[in-house]
Amino acid sequence: MVQTRSHSYSDGTTEYIGYLAEPEGDGPRPAVLIAPAFMGLRAFEMETARRLAGLGYTAVAMEYYGGGFRTGDRAAAAQKMEEVNGNRRMLADRMVCALEEMRGLPGVDGDRLAAMGYCLGGKAVLDLARTGADFRVALSLH
Image (tube, rainbow, N blue to C red):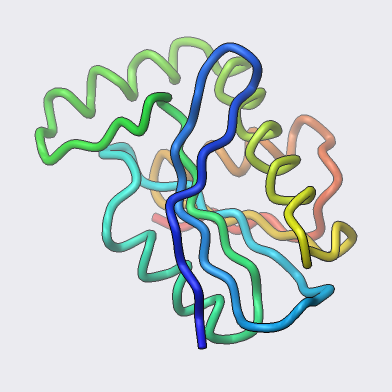
């Protein structure tokens, strides 16, 4: 059985509200960070997290805008995307924050981490890899 819940974390200045999906059991188990497309965390990324948890992974669908931003408005999402695209260092720092949050979760094997992202999230995962952060797999999807 898969357990899911909203998951809040912070970089010390901004609160992020992601989505956590975990299989039953204590672990240790591998984990996958999921970076959403530019509209923010949506049902698609949460379903991906649930599917991965069903395969035995802890999965964290992260949020990189702050405050739990989610929208169905493409113009509002494009404005948020411009903010993070305008400061790629900030985006990379937010990715590192989410990765380290996931690494510290109970039951997670910190030596078996992956990150995947869709669209803007794919670019964010590549930026995460460029930081030299310690994780095994980077998957960018579009």
